Length: 147
Image: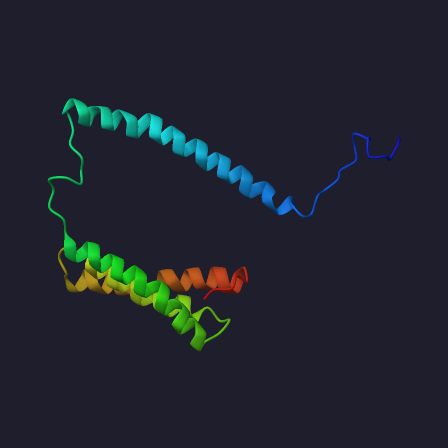
């Protein structure tokens, strides 16, 4: 068997662009899925709006401004404080851990319609357990650097 560049068993890898192989595939899959959603869901919805069968969900409905703007403020504070706290404990992931606990608890309180003692305790337990589990899996098990 010949071992030249024309052999069917030879493989050549361009290392300057090989890291772009899977992201390119993912981009095309996402683009196709986006096009399918547009064709199968959005176009029929707008056709029903034009016929008067449905209305746009944004127009004519009351908005819960407290939750909407509170969520935006919490998300902005979450990303800002994650780096601030992460700089206090570099390369440990504590910025992610501590700020995620507070963020998850406050988001749970914001979207909790009736606050009972049991619901608040459940939200607090969830706010501690979920980020801790994610932190252990990502930072300690897979050695992924967290802020």
